Image 1 (cartoon, rainbow, N blue to C red):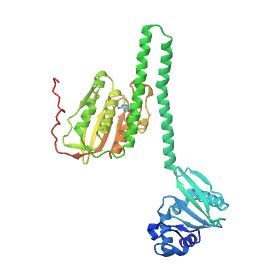
Image 2 (cartoon, rainbow, N blue to C red):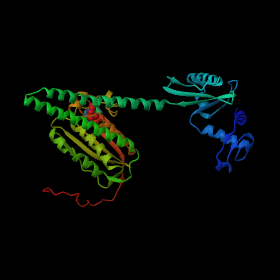
Image 3 (cartoon, rainbow, N blue to C red):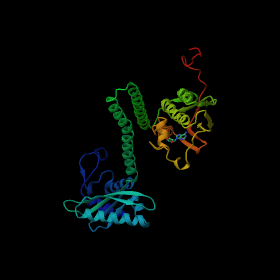
Image 4 (cartoon, rainbow, N blue to C red):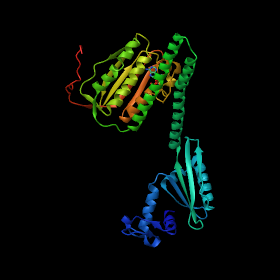
Length: 385
Ligand code: ADP
């Protein structure tokens, strides 16, 4: 079959080769194949067809297959799925032989969900002397498109709630003469505006982190960014009567990456641990070296997470308890920020939780030993500062 395709290729219209490859410019036909003659050029074309990811099937004018690349052979070999795909490819080839250039989608359900895009077109001019079908697995592309569509719908919904509330509150204030009621409504407007700005801040963070797939490899000392994240939340913790206990951090370890993103990831975990604790509770933050990695664990003894939700809490806007998340000023984006930061830094985040007893989130990041660096000028603050 492969030999046949060489014949077929050379019986077609001239193939253009690059001037650099041939040493001259112009069109090359069957008898003037560059770079070592017809056979070598056909072999090169064949290698090119083998090397591309899409499955390719070439037929003659009778619809008989004269070439299929490895991806096509794999796709069309055995099984019910292969039979369905084979049937769709035959139809596409038949349509192309009648001069059409159809593109269709085939959704396969078993053994796994898979979507194929099948495009076909005739070869030969002016009348067809064969046809080509190009089959692409578009499963992942469709999934990403669906995620993007859902995300836009979710963002719109999330922004609509506070903006709707703001409009309503403004209308109510407009007709209100009682100064006490006006003051109360204004406070609520402030709360909604804050919520709006938190969502926007988290969205901006998420899009920055999304774009920052390969953070700079600057070494960020572990004690530095973990301490900063914990300190930034001490006031919030005190306001909710929760103690954050930062255990001594092993010295001399650093994570290659982006300091701001690392602070943000740890802060999101600590923030959640505080928010989902009861008043009087304690949150423990510990750093444990694990070989070439360091584990940063954040444990609380709060509400915990039902087992059925554990897999989904890292999704954007997923909340176990919407009312509680809303009441505590949650945006539903915190854990998805953590997951992105972990992935960008070559690490991961995991969780164990028992409903009603508490949760432990562990952020595992690659860590390297660094010599102890004396504190920079200005880093140290005296108590009476
Ligand atoms: P949110 O802003 O709502 O906290 P996150 O993405 O940070 O959003 O978390 C998603 C959901 O996971 C939360 O709404 C909450 O239901 C659950 N969750 C996260 N951390 C904890 C925790 N420490 N304890 C209990 N539930 C948690």
